[in-house]
Structures are given as C-alpha cells and as structure tokens.
Length: 515
Image 1: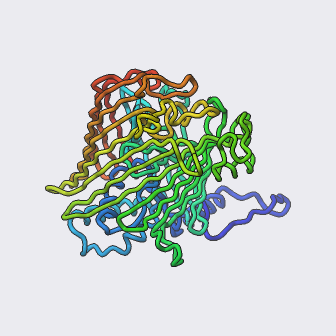
Image 2 (image 1 turned 90 degrees about the vertical axis):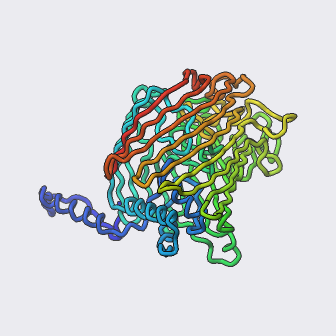
Image 3 (image 1 turned 45 degrees about the horizontal axis):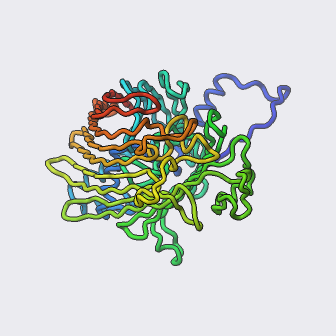
C-alpha cells in the first residue's frame, strides 16, 4: 500500500547504525498503519461481480433517471456512482427510489472502509453447473476467507479459498485476489478477477463468471465521467476495461493467453451500448511477439489474408467480438429495460460474423414494502441461429488451433450453457423491507441441440442433447448485521450431464460473514 510519502531505505551498515529494537519496529509498523487508516481512499474499490442486490438497486436508480452511469461491465467501479449519488437530492425521490438510494449509500460506506474482512462457506450435494449473474459458488464444498485494504491510491484484496475434491484438482485457490493502484483516472492491477460483460441476468455470451477467474493484469477506468471535449461529450459517461491473462497449462495449447477489451457508452440517459472483444493467442508453440498481437488487434487473423499463411503457423488467434445494448425506462412507478447481445465467433470484412445471440426484458416495481423485479431472457449459442439454412453446429467457442476451446479449467468462459444451446428463463427477485430477499426462476433448455460434439480436448461441457425444464429457488436472510444465510434448491425435469456428471436435483447452504 502507498501513502503520499515514500520511505527510502539505504544499505545496511552495522558499524554505523545499531540494529533496530523490537519496540522501534513495532512503532514503525504502527505509524505505517496509522497512515493507511488516515489516508483518503481515492482508489474507490469496485462492486464485485455477482452482487445481485446491489445491481438491482443500482439499475432501479439508473432506469429511473436518478443516476447516469454504465451498469453492464462487472466488476463495477464505485467512483462514478459515488459522484452521482453526491448530486442526488433525496427529498426529490419517491419511496421506492429512497430505498435504493439508502441501500447504495450503505454499501458505499462499507466499501470505502480502509480495511474489511469476509468469510464464506458453502455446502451442496451438486456442483453448480449452469450459473447466472448471482452465482457465487462452483464446487460442492467451498470455503473462503478474504481481507481487503485501501490506502490512498492502492487497493489490496486477498482471497484464500479451499474447494474439496474439485474437478480441476486445485483445492487451494486465490480466486478474487488482486492488487490495484490508481494512476490518474485509471486503475492498473494484477490478480484473478471475476468478470461479467453484458446486460443479461442469466447469461453473458462473451465473458461470464461460470469459469474460475483467469489470473493476469488489467487496466480499468476509475470514474466514468464524460469527455469534456464537445467533439466527444455526446458519448456520455463511458467505461473502458482491458486485461491480459494466462490460461492453464493442461490444455491443447498450454499457457495460451486470453486478452479482452470492453467499451461502454451512454449517449442517452436511457441507452447504454457495449462493445466487447476477446481473443485467445500465444501459448506454447504459437507466435506471441508484438507483431502477432498487432495483427490480432487489427483483426488480421483469417488464413490467406494480410500475410496470414494457410498452414496456420502465423495465425494470431481465436477471436470473439460483438455488441450489446440496454434501453432503460421509467413509467408510472415502474422501471425496467429491454436488452440484447450479439457476439460473433469469427470475423469477415472487419466485422464480427457467425453470430450467437441473447435478448431479454425486465420490469421492477414496489408492492407492500417489497421491491419486485421480473425478467425474461432467451439465448441461443448456435452459430447463425437466426438462419436455419446456414446454422453451423460445434462452432461457437471452438477453434481449429486452440482445440480446448473458449474454456478455462473445464468450464465455459462465455455462456454457462456452452455452445449449441437454446434457453428461455423467467426470473423473479423479491427484496423485503426486513433485509430478506428471494429468487425464483423457471427455465427451459435444449442443451447441445445436435447431440454431437467436438472430439476432446474440445467440445461442449454439456452432455448429449437434452431438453429439460429447471426450477430453482434461493432465499437470503441476514442473521445479524454481518452474517447472511443463503438456502437454495433446484430441480431438472430431465437430468443433464455436465462434464460427464449426471445432475438432476440439488440444494446448497451458504453462510457469508463480513466485518
């Protein structure tokens, strides 16, 4: 951690300087700790991916026109949200908006503490196979301890987790750990960070947190303030994030890199647009010089074009790119949005091609001291899903060089349903005035629609073609000011197969404590 002053230590000279006593060391540490506690945290931390309740309240105020900030690139930086909240006049808000305003203020105060700690333990009889935005577990048995520290322009978050008998054989995990430092309006950092790119509640086609976070470096804008230039101010509040991560060694191309970049703009208070790119490149036996990355950036990765040889020896990588939009509305006590996402598995003419898609709509209101959010979402991860004459199976999230596909440690990096899946989900969220909340969802899925798959090591994590319905419920109850209890249940009418494991019904119990 850094304060505004820097302490310089010279070389050790025992003939001149006596060895420091234990009391002096203790005093020095105490002074440093005092500096940490007194430092004004300019590097406001972010809202973690998967924080469903905070997202609900934030979207309520954004869709109601109270706030104007991007809400579809997670984790979401607090800085611009704080700037917007500081300009709100609470007396001008309705009861429903006051509820969301006070909740966000409460969460912001917690996030700005110079130090905080959390602990989570989860028990289940099944792995979490098809996750959504709110999913906070992957394995049957997980436990985790986290410590977060903020000092002026630096944020350090340490997460130490343990998973019992996980599929990837990595029981000790540091998922969620990161170190970030603020340089101007940019947060530069290193770590393993969960991300969710897009407006959906049930799926993100290009980057979700279905897979474990991939360790790497990242750069993210801290405040989403608009450009001051009249030439660019029309873009409205904007957010930009990019990262470079390294994937695991146990794959067809060991140690392949994953690069991603996303830009969000809000040209209208009711409209948010997102542009996303992701690419696998480099790795053992593949070119990884700056020239290769430059070709990747420019989209020069089709064989036979722009000097790319037919034998794939200098083909840059496996790219995905696309666009999403979210249009929010406020009408007679109701807020909500319609949204969609279109991702290209390939490139043609400088534009994404071979698309997969997602669309949804949601509405939110309050009734008898309860906030209710209802949403409907559908997705199709079959390439050219909208044209039956051109449909291509076993194409999305696959690649002829990176045979393990767009997956990390056995889980999809994009949609949790993997490729060739059609899904429809109705979701309801209930937030009660006593702090409890309830999630209910009913989904219909057609997994792996053609019943075939790529040969290992690639191929969908879902088993043979399966048409099924899923009902799931989870209830959250605060036991006190720092401990939350979550109980969840789910059932598939026809069992599914996830990485070879049969899954039909299950439940989980999770305790989360923070202080």
